[in-house]
Length: 118
Length: 114
Image 1 (spheres, rainbow over the protein chains, first blue to last red):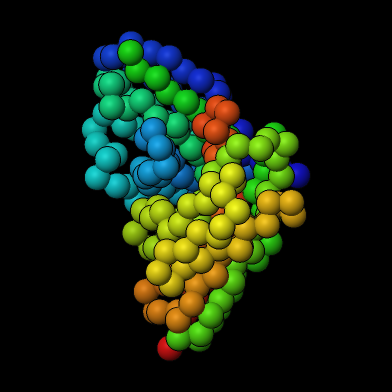
Image 2 (cartoon, one colour; image 1 turned 90 degrees about the horizontal axis):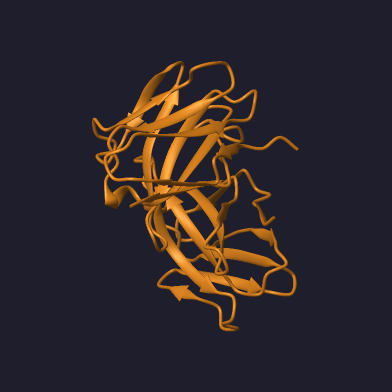
């Protein structure tokens, strides 16, 4: 069964460094998402991406964040200058269609990348 | 690896009625949490309810309750007295207490009809 994959599983970086988190969505999916989970259970939406552009973003997704689909398979989240508070689990998800299209807007989540900023 | 399965991509319910969303999971671990998140059109993930696996008593939170069947690895969400504002995507999630790894189901889109 196809699944969303993410690399690396764990990334440790120094404050102020740039990190790129990688995701490979399910191949026939067109919508892509990033979420993060701060320590504990709070899960926050960051951004959604469709047709090579951001379709929605949250207040968290400020100028230090960017997303890109550099080729036909990868979907990346870049954090330009990491802060201590960026330490979190970052989840990528993909869906076949956008929100509101029954049965095909299910979001399939990857296993996450644990980012630790020191 | 843990997996979470939500077998109902979409469901609908009449306002004021009760609806149950299904979730099953697969794990060999004994210590974990289970969650239901609500995702309205704003995209924000709102924690609806949490269940600790070591607790036999089913968690309840106002109109929301779960039926946690540990042996069957089932974790369904019951919404009583459904309201129009309950219309959203609902995600079931599993979190290992061994390594804090989290797994999400694919979601169930619930529509509450007036």
